[in-house]
Length: 288
Image (tube, rainbow, N blue to C red; front, side, top):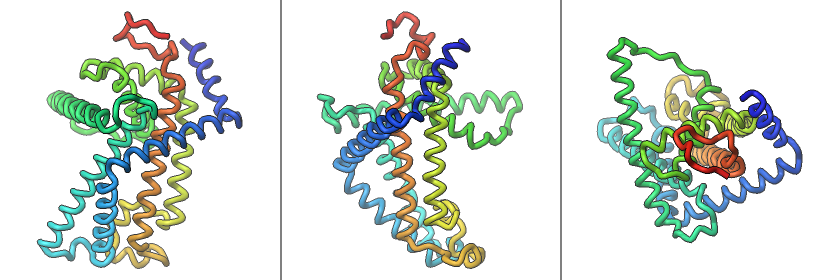
């Protein structure tokens, strides 16, 4: 096991070679562009609506502290935030599902999206019920507090979830096949750890630049929580940033997130057929 692992890491480290890096970025950017194009061709109205809602919410929060709003205004603000959350979920999920669709696929993109979106929702619901069962089981054993995982572990879990989804979509898309996809995803992430470290470092660098150039070191979530408060005036000389700056930062962050997903999928397509990633749940399957 150790030798195949180091051999795989050695292969993954070739990413630092200029030719390999250029090829990976070219494939990733091409996939990112085509996926964004298809996504916005179907959901341009939703995307515009989200921008308008976000501008309205930003205008409200940048003019008044949330605790000073009356009951009607608070309800309206909560409704707009809920709409933003719902629209963001639809757009980001659609992008996530469409990123694996090839441009020459004979299935129309909207039909593919409808089928996979419903299956994805069913999977999320099943996993939610499974998680509730596990939490209830742990609480019955007296385990009610859990340590906060470090950011590196959270990033690894995020990548694991992505690759698991890709394997699951390429399989039978049943709840039972999820565990086989999870096993293969664990192997994939472990055997390609240098690639994921590279992706994480690149994403972190892009986010750091956005935070420190547009948001004075604050995240958009932090801004929405403390803007209008007494701390806001002393947070920075340019505080608070305009709604346009906040929304620009938000969508730049989403673009970085989309690039990261496209990058992970490009790596997945390149190495998915490797023997090291076969599943014990599919021992009878002949892999190329």
